[in-house]
Image (tube, rainbow, N blue to C red; front, top):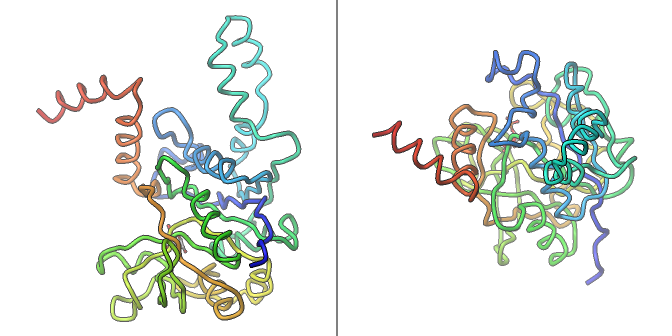
Length: 293
Ligand code: G1P
């Protein structure tokens, strides 16, 4: 088998308004809300780096400039930390910074849907495979979700790989849902894909979650700007048109997904990540005992 082209660039759609989190998101982008002590978007960037991504494209919108600041040096802060001997804090700040010249920002000028957001990155991505990470989907596991998907991508010889998860029938209308063929380990052949189907039209209970490895041929499909579910230009619809033209698989990972675009999901993520951290777990457990008791 020919080794597929490596995936070195990732797109992070971060233009959403975050209306579900108002008033918190009035002046602060929802992607900057923190899970324990890190903004949600940073988890996605770290996951991408772990998977070998070297270039990071953010598709932003109005009021999102602090995301740019977050992924840049903060000279005053850094020199103050240095002056006060706060070596660990300084090291962690510097360690999380992507390399100079590897971060790109472009704007989605109108909220026309996820497909449109990805299309806005077309000139930055160019003619190479790329990953898309939706930061709202926080993936927690020993090995990152995208890294696990890269394994699948390399084993099956490239094409499209979308992270997948089984959901109960009552929730399928909120997701992209796959029609499936043969299963090969963690990879499931995809024969169809539909965005936010009505319960009777859902082809299976296997849903797409916000991690994708995509080939550049998608941009010609997105160029059509066809509107789909909810009147939006859906990524799912363009992905579906690639089925049959290249290998196309859904991939199960062993990560736990938290929907940080939802209040309960976001709080759940904070608790789960907090309880997994040795520095926080004992105090958090005690606080929870007092609260629920
Ligand atoms: C998007 C995608 C959908 C996918 C979901 C995963 O939907 O369009 O196919 O299942 O992310 O989180 P959204 O959550 O933006 O409505």
